[in-house]
Length: 269
Image 1 (tube, one colour):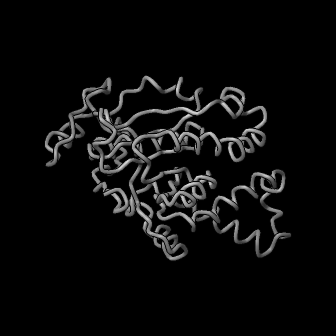
Image 2 (cartoon, rainbow, N blue to C red):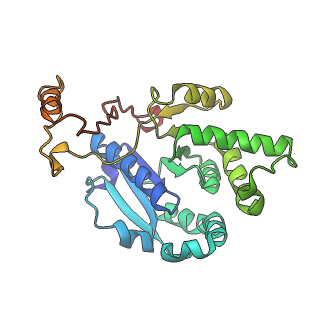
Image 3 (spheres, one colour):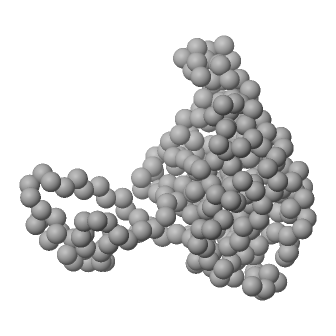
């Protein structure tokens, strides 16, 4: 792989947690599979590289690691505030030194929304940054409203006891949300049709370009199930017949429309 042969070099920096790394990796996997002229460097701690370093990936998606400057993933629950504090204060410097070494130079950054320092790092280098929110848009909207409520009425937070008990983390979450507006793009991991109203509400509150990427989950084939369910076809041929052949009330059928159009944002073209 010749690093100089790519039109765009993206550094992907997830928050070091499974629920954050998985959607970031799936986004990068999809993008790398669709655009072979885009090089993606996925940044992990050495510990996390050991966890997922053997996962199959396209040739233009590569893993790079930074030292284990944060507590182990295996013990994070013992002191989550301490883990969070380490992520917010100790990861930026090794990530910045890694960017200095990467070839070709990074031209875009995709960072987890909670990594507010990644936005500042990109802005200092004149690199466009996309903030990726790994959870539902409804949760994003609720949390943003909660932050506004806390700012306007700091004493009226009695019903949010979990936030009162950990003011340090809540303060860092507020800082992360304030940095979203300093990013160049916001990426939402949802389908517009699924959360249309709340996505429109978010777009009304934030002036930066916002893209709904759809659920960033791994693709799989129905044929891998232990039950011989027919593979999906564009005309649904076989699916309805299979459902009709099952005995009454024996099937729980949940359909998530996954055939959305995955758009490559303009900053990656």
